[in-house]
Image (tube, rainbow, N blue to C red):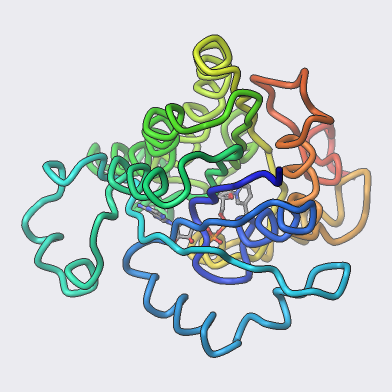
Amino acid sequence: RGKRAFIAGVADDNGYGWAIAKALASAGAEILLGTWVPALNIFETSLRRGKFDESRKLPNGSLMEITKVYPLDAVYDTPEDVPEDVKANKRYAGASNWTVKEVAESVKNDFGSIDILVHSLANGPEVTKPLLETSRRGYLAAISASSYSFVSLLQHFLPIMNPGGATVSLTYIASERTIPGYGGGMSSAKAALESDTMVLAFEAGRKGKIRVNTISAGPLGSRAAKAIGFIEKMIDYSYSNAPLQKELLADEVGSVAAFLASPLASAVTGSVVYVDNGLNTMGLAV
Ligand code: NAI
């Protein structure tokens, strides 16, 4: 039987989530996506109109099939958590069942179970502010969208994950080294995500024989990264200083995610795996 994957955090064909979906599809997995509610309409329209057909191409020439796209807002666990102004917002009112608990229920009703859960989402409303100028609200929002969102997804999906399954999330080295400019509590959020990877690997391993790993990825000019404002500088810095002087392709992160989700990685859990052309190992810019 082929594996079934749910990938949270795909809203265009530029980011890591899309590349991971392709790598998993290429390895024979069935693809379900969770797309942020405000981005759902344009993503589905673009998909339908064939705007992504070129980037849906897999190495064997076929096009990646996306079995279903679920609206998702991973900062809300249940309908009771959704504030009135969000409920009334017309981008949200047009969709339904998009809290984490409801999405897990919908996937269960539609397909029964999954094997692979991917978390490829982050948001920090004050990311452009230094930590020293970040508000409590902005800091907590970054943690909520970028770290607790993974705890919540695993909490709600674990009961429908087949034993032997795996989860993968995306983190960034700003958690353990100072990256000036990666602000708003986003560095804190990634530190939480990495620590939670370890603790959840234990808990989900014991409870459901599920592996939990995170990929510490190098810089990619995704939509989310462009919002931070200095991604081109990061890419140039990496090119100049990493052991491997080449562009980092989203597909290279996709391949490692597919490996981590596969039986080839059956003894790997609780790990932070670097996919960054080796940049994390350098102690001196040359
Ligand atoms: P992206 O823009 O493709 O992905 C971020 C996704 O998160 C978007 O689809 C957005 O709609 C979604 N999202 C935001 N808030 C959400 C919410 N409340 N509920 C559901 N979805 C929500 O950008 P990218 O860069 O591929 O990001 C994916 C992951 O990779 C993130 O965790 C990011 O921090 C991480 N990463 C990115 C790096 C980069 O240089 N681009 C480097 C290292 C890690």
